[in-house]
Amino acid sequence: MNRILIRARSSILITFLLCASTQLFARCGVERWSIKTGTDAAAQQIDLLNPKPTTIAQLVQLAAPQPIPKTSRVTPTETTVWVVNATLTDYKHETGSRGDDDYHLVLDDGQGNTMVAEIPSPDCVQSSSPFAAQIANARAKFDSQLTASSSFQSANIPVQITGVGMFDFAHGQRGAAPNVIEIHPVLDIVFNPSSDVNNPDFTLTVPSSTIQLAQGGSSSVMISASSTSGATTPNVTFSATGLPTGVTSHITTLGNNKATVSLQASTLAPTGSFPFTFSGTANSKTHSQAATLNISAAQAATGQQWEYQIVTAASDQEMLDKANQLGADDWEMVGAVRQGTNGWKAFFKRAKRDF
Image (cartoon, rainbow, N blue to C red; front, side, top):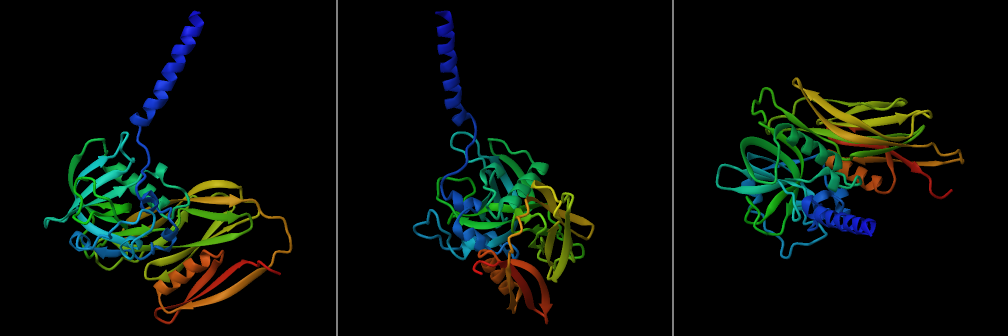
């Protein structure tokens, strides 16, 4: 009889703890969550390599959509990466039963305008999101400077915030703009950005956090750097470090502080997931972005045939748009060369589908 009572009480205690855990620990968000974390269909179309400088005063003047779409983006505001310089006045870790585990940041431009920026928890961002690596990096950079808690704390620190625009629903957020425009998610944060035009700082942008590579195969990704102060971006040297044995990298400089990083795996490269790092160095400063390399086993020889095409573009943006469109259809960039002052010629390949 005593054993039955003990078991019954144990079962009740376990049930209570399981139920209580949903209230004691933060959970991921719901409202416009695919937009906030980059898992919507349009996220792949966002130009991560060319962030646009703006101000809080300009952003708060944008007309909010009526109604706000729950699962689609508002162009061009929500398909643009913005760069904002402001003062971080308050911050909080949104925990508890109603929290979504974001870091809530209040930004002030010193002219009476405020807005919210949010850094999601990397645990709440799917690996398929093109923002995943940058969100994780932004969160780590914040943690290296401040410790967010469940209550608001004051900071009053100059920051530069890089991230995607997002119109949120109004629910009494501290620091919310009149049109409830936010930078959500934050993709990068720089504390006390340098304003020295003779020694400008920069941020590093990587459009994908996960690189797929097969044994004996190759893959490439384009990375870029941009100034944090509005000054001319310094001449940045890019690198990829921490690659597993059997994988080599080759950097092709494209100009305008952009480069293609080509990764080549030998047939003996180990399979699995491996963390590595993209870095950029200039003016004695180095900034990095974490990424993951997924190496799969080589496919058995089946007489695989390839098809190729050459693409030309008149500008960096046109080249980027075409590369994104082709990438969505399984084309892989093999290489790119500059044509004239602004033009490009790029070579693409993919496995032949019908032969």
